[in-house]
Image 1 (spheres, helix red, strand yellow):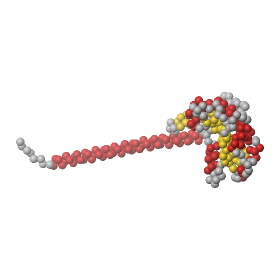
Image 2: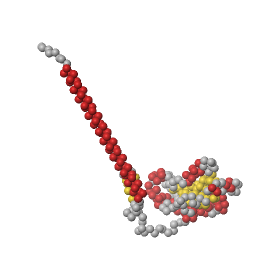
Image 3: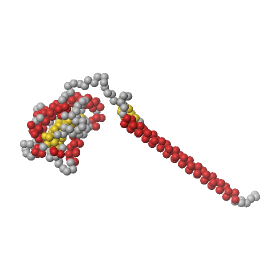
Length: 282
């Protein structure tokens, strides 16, 4: 990326009208197609060097609809800001996005802002964090169980992150934009060869751990588990030993106090016996 250090970063958010959660997969498919069209536009190809795009879905609490939108980090050529012909306003981005979506009944909300170019690069870090944040807010996951389940079904097999241009290989498990936008026309023929993964709850670890199939060996996991188990047992033994030591110490103190009390009583009796009490005759 050293050769593109003169480039400028833009943070672009692309939205569409809310849809029913049951239509989420279809809506995101149309948005992906529109984004692919936008990437092929002459202006985009001329000034864009690369991009990172993610999908976020939020829930409208009033009518329970879904609000899918794209968070996109664009790496633009420095010449993008040089003239009015190259620079695009927020309204122009919105018009471009509407044209790519092929809609006429409303102007979609678009937010475009330049990432400040500073030595500390904190603004860029914030923009990357915003782009790569969660696809669904945790609060939306627990607010409506049925809504979240349907949303999960709608997003099944969806690629929530894509890159292009010089940023295409920015992530180890990355796929190309073309691959991301291709619709899955063939279902995976998994048949009976499903690789089932189950998890068991381990009280000593206070967590779930993956239960491996009998034919799969994972020595690292086994060693880690045994090491943790051994450490837990040793800690329990130490606590028991500490309790036992405390009990023995307490017993010693009680015994010592009893011996002192016995000596005091014996001494008092001895002193009393020495006293010559006169006999009084009545």
